[in-house]
Length: 224
Image 1: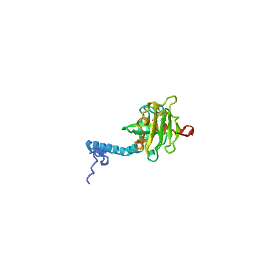
Image 2: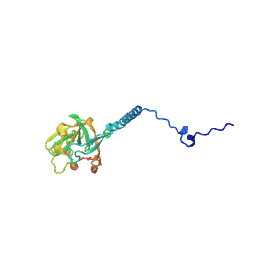
Image 3: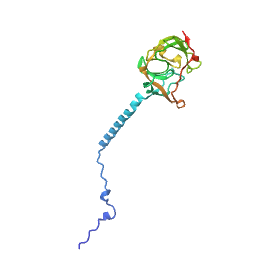
Image 4: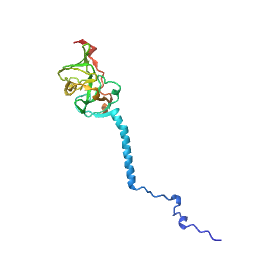
């Protein structure tokens, strides 16, 4: 009888790996791995655009305040989020703070307060703003409690009849504001949205910052 062959010494001492322990070498070249990475990055960027861009253009858009026309309600450097959705289903209200494209240069964005609504007559006499009913001629003086105390408004006289989709806007800092008193009403199509969130500075975070329901002075009516 032939003796059985002995196991190889290397197997005996465990120095040779068993077949199932052998790992297959990676065959993907570095060039393909790099291409795959770039493809994934492009796909991620496209997905981000698909999600973020509609949100920005149809729901909310950030703006940074620049200038003193709305001081002290809003100051330079404050970070706002504009609500672009509400005015798709409802109309701007008197007292709303709105962001809009400057009618004389659509590349510029302004922030002002809505004072006059479509179809109204706005009458400004020095520091007094009145709303005149075009049908009855009745005039009511606005009580603008949001204006800075002790600061005189820009003097002058103006009377403007607003169209069916026009809004009369003014800055709270009347002496430093270029607004409808100077270049006329704002068409509704130019209004981007209302100031919905103030995120910066953190100490002044607020929802609907600067929002006021403007009342008429003593709710009195006078005939002119």
